[in-house]
Length: 171
Image 1 (cartoon, rainbow, N blue to C red):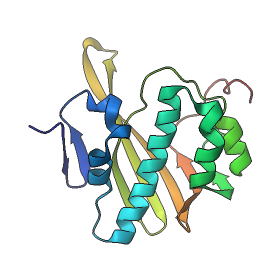
Image 2 (image 1 turned 120 degrees about the horizontal axis):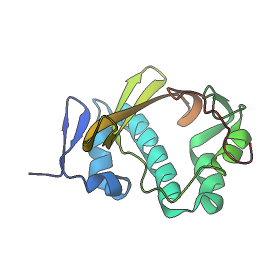
Image 3 (image 1 turned 135 degrees about the vertical axis):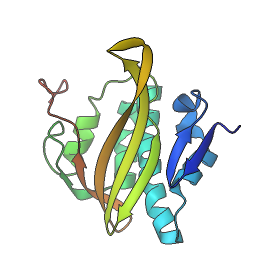
Image 4 (image 1 turned 45 degrees about the vertical axis):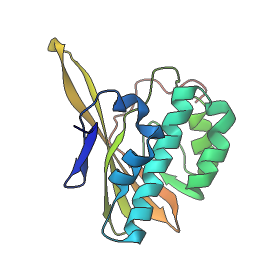
């Protein structure tokens, strides 16, 4: 059995180790990005690579060293932000927000699907977590986030997260 499969565009992870290694697995990212046209595959890959590069910074604790280069590679200057935990529009505000993202908590969840509709893309990530009602079991936590893509870069973002009770340090 392979450590993952993609069924109807959604990755199914069979080997739990992949949750920690997905961002360095070219075969995994290429399989999740597969689409019906090269253009759609390129947009899906843009989003997967963006999430992988963010995850790599968090996993490796290199946010301070890499955040400017990573975000400038993927995000337009006049970026519009709709996440209540990331105040302000623009690339500079996003960079400042990411400077305060906590690191050292392992690898962020893998992208398991990217759905495209025009210039909008919904990214779905998945992470098994301990079930608070049954601590010996886990449940699948899905994270959905939506981006508008313009000229090969991320131009706008909506998040499904609720506003935190306290902002990240420095904000």
